Image (cartoon, rainbow, N blue to C red; front, top):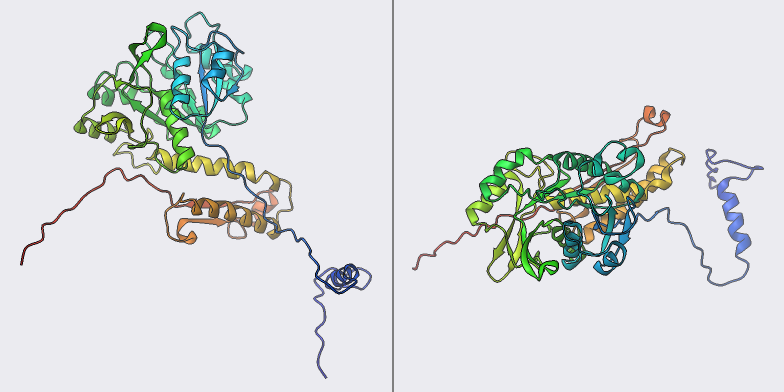
Length: 415
């Protein structure tokens, strides 16, 4: 006689019927005549949407418009309508112009000051700005931004060191990236190298570009004038993200600067090498390419720093993944902290990382070589569970830019 296996008694019973039997009974009631039946079964995978990577926030003085209120715009025409366009004595309008001219599409404008007086550091990070959410901290009212540009505002054409320091710290907290303009004292390569120690930050969430730009000024009869490069660089970031992805370095022969006639300082190959070794990104004029961005290092990109966040695209890719996962896993809060939850998290995050891998965001020929996702008993202990915690670990093999292409040529001896 064939032995009949009993149902698994770990499965809950109600009225003497096992869960398997109840499910079978439910299906049999639904299927009442011969034919094909279609049933939709939830996959358990929750989609993690990718966040935008190139929303640029600008803080400065404008002729009109709302004060201390991050206002989204999508064109320079909108800036002219809302904030009054270009203004003599303010570099904000020129920076916005260069952003959209070079490929930017989304910007947040924070207007500070009264539109007439010269700005000081207190307009950005002075007493009460954090508690009142004004100046730099007006961005607390913004849900999300990725890039931050503070155009020069002092009478000397610079940004106060204290503002740079606090802006870098704020960007680290908001998972954003700070684009810095070179100080006016950087009139040659040696001055730039020497000036790094007084820049105000060495944050891995920031990068500085040298030299300044020479462009026409419509408010001065289209005469050539010198401008800070931050807005144009932010536009290059946005253009590169759109065409190639955040993991592509916003530099190279594709990173041409639109609307730039020349640079305030001409940089040679040896000079570029000196800047590179200090983590300063060079802007250069190259034959057949024109004016281009020729560097992609963070402020921790100096040759002696040894930082894992040496390159701009590596750091920004990490910030992009962090922000996407932070927003895409909010549903897990207050869910039962067990294997069911961990399994759903692993499925969702693996699907997200696999999508990036297929787009070419990581190194490696297989997914196993490119990234890993861990969430379970190996990352979450019983003590973690008791404290209401679960731990998710995600790693990826970043694409690092090929800064140095070495050609080895050997002459073949004739026989």
